[in-house]
Image (cartoon, one colour):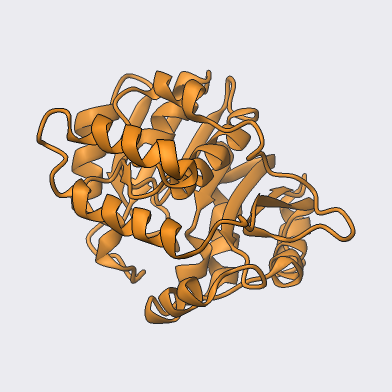
Length: 281
């Protein structure tokens, strides 16, 4: 692609696309891809906004026939290709609203934390449906406005993102998809106080020292002993995910009286005929 119209924050591919600066963010990322992996076996899958490519590789490792990871940042694509590219896992630079693929090519299209950056979220969804086969699955995630803290609200505004809640994301996807379900992920933690934020900030500083042998494991040990929600982690092998993933952090349907999750994970199926899609455009 010669031009990429979608705007996003440069931080999405810096400094290392497969490093996250606190344990909670890491767990959320793991849980989204783990949820998607149950639909990956034997499928052709597109991972839009793949970042450093670890999630695309994870889906391939879970049995996908083909995984194509795409991102707008050249640095992220280069890193992903170098670290995770292979016979069934490929990466390229792309514009999420003008995908360079034939119509009805993929069985599954996944895109996490992408729809909120789209100038026209509906156009993004329609383009994802275009490359999906009849009956294919669309899986996406976005922060839940009703559960975000003051800090995260400020961050979203500075990134000029679209903020969704359960009702808004459901209304959007119901126009184009069938059998839409919206799940909550990661209930608001009780320990989001000063100690936790201090540990998280410390993790960000230590990331810049990540090349020093032994620093990351030491910080994991010390911070993990006192504040396990904010352990600093660094992915080395996809196999590490099995031991890191918190079983409690699975997407779940919201029950009456339960607190909403900080992240919404939506799953929907493309209508079985093109006429059904065109009728709602």
